[in-house]
Image (cartoon, rainbow, N blue to C red; front, top):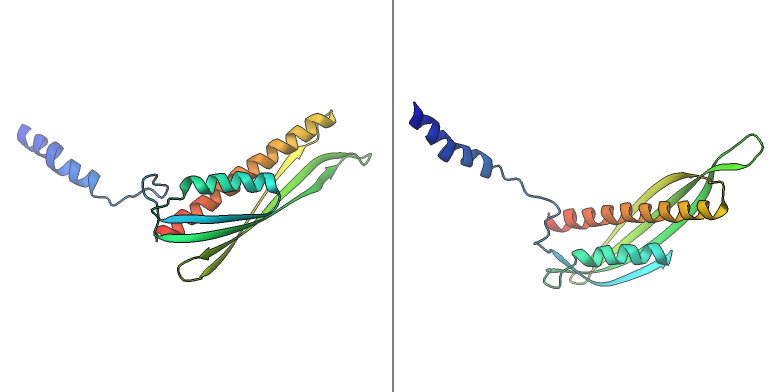
Length: 157
């Protein structure tokens, strides 16, 4: 009886655990594309954030040579006002249109990423501006993550 348990532990259990075929999408070691050029149109601050994040996952050894154009549009809208007409909440919408050009076969891919976030107006104007900057940076990070996931999934398939 004891040998059957040992057999299960050392033979069957590893077979079940290691042969599941699971592979991470965000694999750091594998590089499938090389970004040769990134052009930024629109909001430059967010553009540089996106550019740096994209270049981190690019590899010169990648077989797909691409050029990326990012058109970034940031809009700030009034979300709510109080009874006296004073603004209490703003909404920031970040719309990023990404155009990918393949250098090998001149294929073009368009993808649009849209994110929005609300933030409250603070008592001081400078605090409101700081909240807006933080919210904008958070939106930029979210869109960067979406772009990276899109590129990884598209070029690994």
